Length: 226
Ligand code: DX5
Ligand code: ZN
Image 1: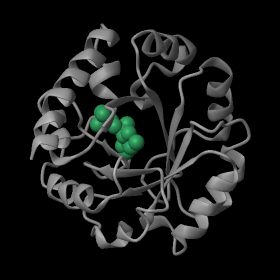
Image 2: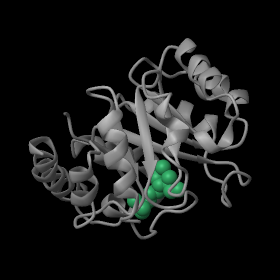
Image 3: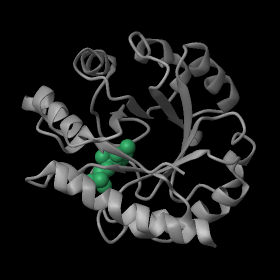
Image 4: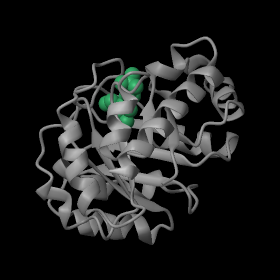
């Protein structure tokens, strides 16, 4: 399974966004993670479609757009004005009564569809969707802010979902991912890793991304062997 590191720009220098993107791009990051918050689904407000469109103009690295918003169906169109087939649009299972409808809307716009699940939401809520999505995003913090501590108990849920997921389904983890915690997530079965603080709070982004990738690779090997 391919290990992918997704740089969450929530902790980037917002006055230097173009440069920050260029730096993580040169550092070999696989995805750019864009945290969209509406002040309703989570107690914070961040970026919208305007930023997503701007990002599409300055980078070829696929976007990993994480919608933490209510009524995601209403916003699929505005977030996908400039997106391409390798970009991913992910919404929360807790935010809709019609997840399949939202998945189909996203796919209809020609990009990949992801579903995210909060730390305390039961795995049964997403089980039936695994065949229909391109990525599952398992939150290891309550969404809303970067810099929170990794919730290790979520690894049990990652293991259960990896066991029943179709082969090669991307499983992303998000929240508190850094050296020392990425190994837990990787050995539980995650292969895509979103990180804000562990990249943007460091002086050398390349060194930070390589350290994350190395620890994930070493530990995902343990998972594959089991
Ligand atoms: C949290 C966001 C995360 C956040 C991660 O609600 O979804 O993507 O930026 O930040 P760190 O890596 O600092 O925990
Ligand atoms: Zn996120």
